[in-house]
Image (tube, rainbow, N blue to C red; front, side, top):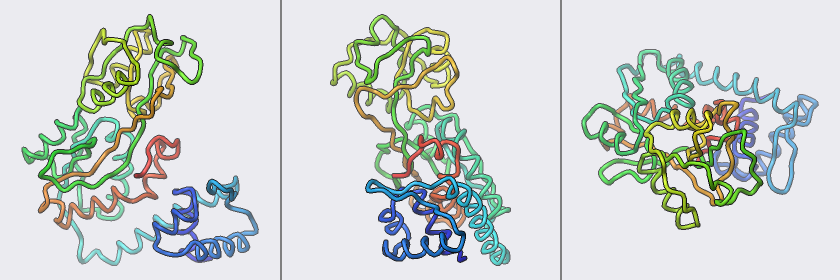
Length: 302
C-alpha cells in the first residue's frame, strides 16, 4: 500500500470522477485507475462504484476513505515537523460571512494549528455583505477576505467555494415539486438585505416572481428563525440555513442560482509568507471535503 494510492483514491472521491482527479493531480486517468485497482487488490475490497457519470465510494470505500484522510493528515504533519526550524509565526486576520465562519473556518483553524502551531488565525465573521468584507480589507482590519463575487477591482481575487440559493419555507406548508412562484402566494416574503441576495432577487423577478417584501432583515439566521415561526418565506444561501430547524424546509428555486465565493486581498499581503500558509490550508480540497457541509454536498469547490 502506498500513500500515492490513497491520494488518488481521495481525489476521485472528492471530485467524483477519474478525469477530474487526474486534472487535479496532474497525471493520467490510466495511472489513477491502475493505482486504485492495485489498492483494491491489496485490501481485497471494491472501493469505488464506477458509472458513466462518475464514481462514488462503496460502503467499504467510505470506511477506507475515513482512514485514508487521517493518514494523509499525518503525512502533512510529518512534513511540517521537519520544517520546525523555519517555523511560520504571526497572526492572519480573515473577514467573512457568518456561514463561512461557522461551517468552514473551524476546520481551517484546526488544520493550521497542526501545520503551523505558531501561526494564529483571527476570524471576523460579522460581515453580512461583500461590501463589508471589502471595507475590512481596505481599512486594514483584515488580511484576507472571503467574499461573494464580484469583488471590486484593486485586489488579488481567487475563485473559491460556492453554494446555491434556495427557497426557505415553513415546513408545515405543502409544496409540489418543482416549486412555482404562484405556490408562494399568500405567504409573506422576507427579503435578505445584501447586495448578493439583491442580485439573485432581480433574476427571480425577471423569471416571474412578483411578490414584494413585507420585511427586510440583514441577518440570514434571523430570517430562518422568522420562517420557522410561520412568518413568511425567503430566498437564502443554502449554507446560511444549514442545518435548518425542524420547522423549516429548504426547496430548490424555480431558477438555478449560485453564491460564488472568492479569496481576496491586497497583492503584497497575499504574497506574504504567513498569508500564503493560510491560503494553502484554505484551498486544501481534502479539508473542504471533510467538513460537514462538504460531506452534505452544500459547499462545492469551483
